Image (cartoon, rainbow, N blue to C red):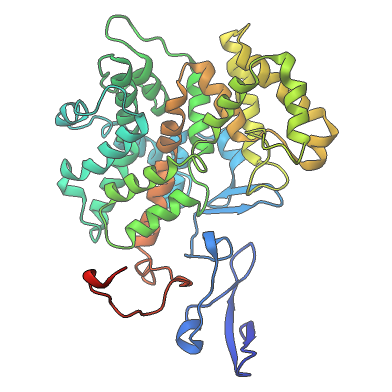
Length: 432
């Protein structure tokens, strides 16, 4: 069977160019334009790369129209309800769900990498007390390559895997340290007897002066938040990690680049924006006013946490997060919290109002995760930090896949130049 192709015609010359079409295992077929510039002298123009495939990947598949998110072929809903975060980490890294024996080994490996070099304590103290936790996370992660010289050779598969394990294990420790530093509390060393999520909550909220009591509902909620944010295909931060990695940069530098990209409010700050919106509304009695504003095309106000750029029908992560949200609020018995009251009333309206239903403005994963994190006691400055902790495994899996792809080249996008053409230089004393 001959390969499918498409033909492009240059209207100015009449020349035609034949381009191969590449099929994936699912999703749309893609036009292979790798030889377009060499053959025709043209390249494509695609701001934001929204119509451009930059790589071949076997890790994550999204169908936004149908509300589908698959990791290695498994539906996110199944993974979130039936797996713990480290099982999903193993799946993303290795391509298959672990056997019981493999999970025990992997769990032990990650657990025994959770401590950070003692000098990092002193390095972190160089930041101002009011430094944003994301600034600390980005800086310390990038500096890890100066502490772990034995896992920066990206050509060595063993070193690549050691670096992968270290990053997955140490990001929660660094994130918790960033929080503790901001509130003036002592750092809490990780505990090997706790699960990944339990350990993170212990390092974040535990104190040396009293025993820490684990709440299984909160630990499970934290674990689900990590699972639901573990990877999301070629988003801005993942693309940043791949682009940095394509130059041969060490893995710690690549993940730091991903953290920096995630910090942008258009990417990782959505759940923080939800809380700011709830604060702007301020009172349940004002909800109708803001609903009216949201429906007004001439009003700049937008309801944050509703609808999704990628998912045009529904966010498959949201239902799991909704259930988790109500479990957490029920367990904590939170009453008379104005922001949470506003959030729950907004949820009720969004699920019943014809306008929201028609426009498919459903509450998304960011709406619920923001509510959960506030209820658990996290300040809004930590929200994107938690996103980064969860997404580290996705970044690492994508980076590892890219490094092992023999066809991968250093990233070098082209541009449509619209500036001045070559001009004659004017000496300084002759410039008017």
